[in-house]
Length: 197
Image 1 (spheres, helix red, strand yellow):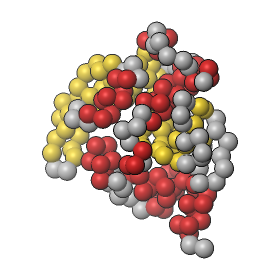
Image 2 (tube, rainbow, N blue to C red):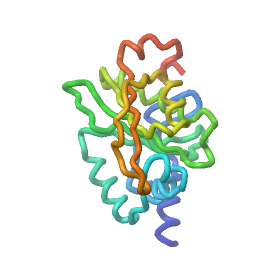
Image 3 (cartoon, helix red, strand yellow):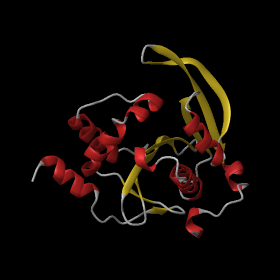
């Protein structure tokens, strides 16, 4: 059996979900998910919108191994109810003293534009405010990433500013939108919480 086949089998194995959304589940990211994550990160749309560039699979494995032991981030694979992995989400730069973290979200190309992004982001914010007692979540994306801005707005995030000419992408300077969701805003959202689903 090839190494990639072994990793794909590991990525598709039965997992115990730790967080639930309306139509998705989260399971902790594992080193065996590296090849799957690599394929999603290599998608041209993700590379363009998020600014990823190809890295060796060994680098990604090492990064996942390092991040598993990190106390300032939580990474999850997003699953459909049948266990199909469809994306990755994370809370990074967690500061439990200040009550802050940044959210990240990446969906497989064939699972975009189906409501899974909003569902996953809602579940992640419920986890952040309901389990971790965070006070502020932040998201950063290119100002022209309409899909990400739409998903963030649907989940209650408010754009609070723009970092002008903040990154270089494909030889051009890009502005970055900074969005946030505060605990009182989350508490005021008229939707069921993930633990009520």
